[in-house]
Length: 498
Image (cartoon, rainbow, N blue to C red; front, side, top):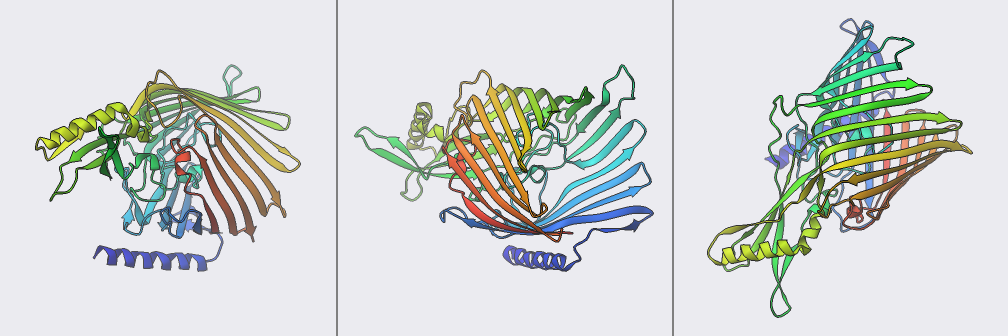
């Protein structure tokens, strides 16, 4: 019955997308209930071509995103962005419906999602926003230490853009604009954000194409025996959605930003108190007694961890001739960092814990817990980055250097204690900007991984956009992005702007 319902939902999605493609390619403007309304968006389809046929298949992606902006006079406005998506990295076994705001491990296809929905009220010196909102704080391009309010979705972690990765959070934002006074900062603004309900980060389910390989155990765990051989224990993985933090005053998140101008320098200061929105996991394990004369089996259980942090940061940006410079830094107290889970296979303490569990099972226990020790670290961290961009012979160049310094850590993490990442974005436009050739590269200098994303984008009649691209990933398996090195792919994306 579930498969039949899912099949009907997919047929409806396909019909809606075909209807959207047949619609006029122009934003609609009009009046509704006495207000001015504008509706726009895009319809797209993407086909991925895997280089390694052993990786999990990825379905053809169809996505319809619609944005509605409305104004009632000069002080009140409402914006709504919703999306309808089918296929992509999601597996065929998923059900149609909505993504919820409680679970980390979930995969829905076809899926309807409210991306943003915000009511805005403008007054002389105050601006208020209320609803489900995405924030963009910080000045760097991809790695912003101070951009911590919104969690992200990691079902497609590399291909998605910044705004596409973010998940809107229910929040209240108040902005106060300082008056123009000689003794006050120029264009000064104080912003305060309250997020009363924590929304967790999101991953797909185990077995999907972008599920972290570092969190997936090997098929067997080898226990050395006295004669130089090994006793192999079959392993399986279970994902478990931990209960999200309760809707209470203590679990709310609070953030503040003050930004202003001074002699051509755009600067800002930040503070955040709340639950960490970056992914953090706890790994547990147990051994199970053999059934019907079989062998002992092992199960690992991966569950999310919700860790409270405090962050203080700042950034600056200015131009000098043809160059634009940006810098950003943040200090985070007790941030959680994921351990290199594959390193547990070689950990002598884990090996001893497995032996103890086997002894317990041999004594008649149906199962035994295996003590894996600490599978994540809570450490103070300092993150900083520098960026510069310019144009040379009609070629747009952007370069960034960022580093994460994990302080007082004794565990082998998925990143190095001093993790350095280099980013380059090079693009050249042709045919009156209708054709764009772009290369994005990310190099993890400390963890030794490389990501290359060349792509060619051609825009037809201002409404239709065709993109041909490739994604290449290389590096160590025990690194944040290098673990996906088997996921090289080419792709074609067709987008129709409404």
